[in-house]
Length: 134
Image (cartoon, rainbow, N blue to C red; front, side, top):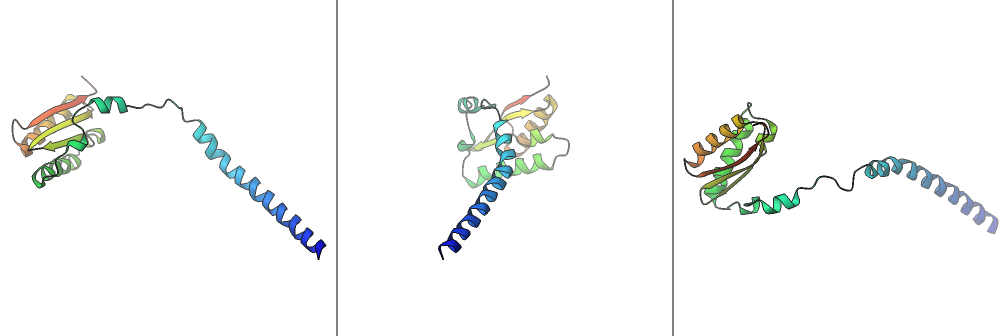
């Protein structure tokens, strides 16, 4: 019986070694891929922390949420706008809309501001959009 147990243990160890070898073979590309990510990847957290207001300042009132939702819907449906422009920050609080983020051109900046004024009303929009081309 001891010889059967010893044979079984040896067989188990062979299987375990193969599993470890296969596992390390499979995991090596993932580890190598993660090793290629630079430790100092771009981080704009400090800039975002300094920029005010933030998305947390969005009002939860039904009117402000509806204003933001309507503007976002118009942005997404406008085929003349870039994906960058469609993803700007829209912060609405007490009927006042703040637009923040990068856009591709001054024309996009103006188009979005006009859309926001149409929804929120003239004088209720603060345009902090940053065109990449000047």
